[in-house]
Length: 157
Image (cartoon, rainbow, N blue to C red):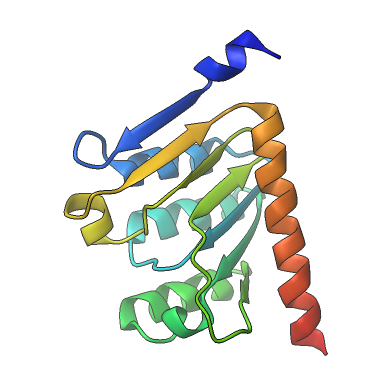
């Protein structure tokens, strides 16, 4: 038990805090890697944070819902821009949705209900948890790596 760990987790509500800014702060602070999973992604500022991370030499990899990624023009555009920059995007391969909304770096994690959209930022009721607890952060990292490996292996078959 680490008493400081409890203080290193903060929950934010979108009608009190700009969730997109909290997500981009975590991405901007990454030095080694940024892994993400998202269902709906149309926010250009978050796209720009991923691109900037990639351009400064950070490994950036993502997991997205296949149907959702190719059903919304703005999301399709973001997927293409990320892929064109050399960011690996892996898609689920089943008929159900990939509904995770997570970012993890070597320093922190973000998870919650927040889709990276205008309505998720300004209108819906959404929360995120931003944490720096190493045990929880590592669990998110390991989970995303397992999911990446599962879908990537199926895409190769």
